[in-house]
Length: 376
Image (cartoon, rainbow, N blue to C red; front, side, top):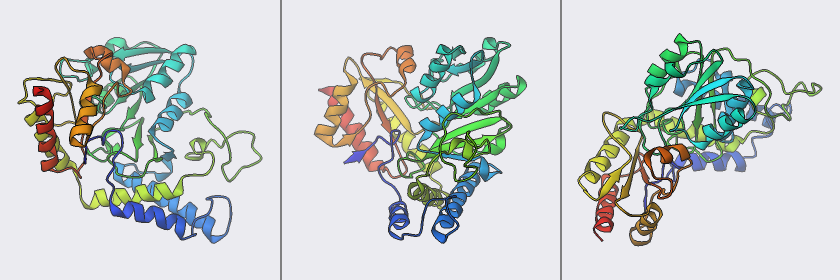
């Protein structure tokens, strides 16, 4: 089997991830953090702090207590959008966004907020040059993807940050498609929130994600429950990270994520991933029967999206698996406005997304398979 659906979740993980997960449960060393003064509870509290420190280190954030852990990036983005914005607030986003951003923003719009969506250029990049045209007195923030989960096109985040700072706006970044496969540092950003997921290019377990918070924000309570302290307060503690971490953390999985990041630090995959993605794109471009929704120039998220002319994407994906045992993503990719913009609402798109565990041989085998299908 050739697995090319890493943009959804990475299938191959470092061996140490599974070992760490197993040990966390089998050792009986970890209790419920912040719920006791005995060793097992304190072990968990210390372990979670170490997870935060590892994530803060990896992403260039100074204060590990501003690393909020969540069940996935969707929870993190919802917490941030619902915790920061309300009726009367205007948000600038884009048609390139995933539903993890779009749906909370549409809910905000329905409850009295307002929304402006930036369009796409011909190379599938977001029209960030239109941000300032959309500014209003009520504009509160720019909420934007670091890279499209369909095209893999990178957003010029430094330029967006520059515009945000110039206009005193909050910047919220959906980093799902870049965390672990492209270098990113919070040191380059202020008044910024970066959301990440653990189970894609970071190669951690599913059920892990969170947000990195740099700046001063007036958060509202979104969800509430046990926090392990201040139990007589009727409200969730305002302190970070507890405000957005009600209930018991998924400690075994977060320990697995920490182990995965350790492997990334020891063996940085960035250049290898770019080389593999460029090889896939370059070889597929030789096929005149393909339509492309990726425009690989200097750098891209590890995604190449295509269609075979006049063919339905889901049928192509099924043939790739049935005849060649190649796993890809097809359909609408939870990015409805991107599909509307490029005219693939009904047809869908075939997405091939890579990890550093893929090989050149797998890439070339996928290219040959698509060539054969396109000819037949």
